[in-house]
Image 1 (cartoon, helix red, strand yellow):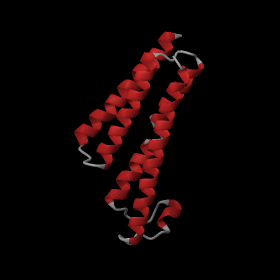
Image 2 (cartoon, helix red, strand yellow):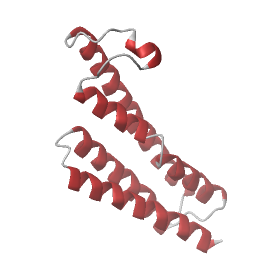
Image 3 (spheres, one colour):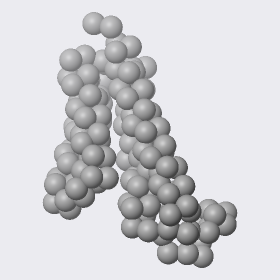
Length: 137
């Protein structure tokens, strides 16, 4: 098995972050042009009430730099320690799919229970991933 396949899961997460970042930028322009948000707000991110749609995408973008960092670490660790197998690949790509679904729910319907359940699923996958890698040592 080619162990470098697991590294493409990192690329997928990067592309998700890039997509959400571009969407946030698009919505920032919208807030300035249509909702009359003063551009100076973005100097310190203070001094105005943001439209809900911008708060939502900003929170999601920030979230992509929280628990996914643990995903990046375990993927790199699995690769370096040479423990990449079918299980680690399944866990890595399952996590990516869960995060993509989470993004669509959060930025789409934003159904709280569904969003929470998908998020918790991603945490369970990540936890199993960490445990599995260390058991394989």
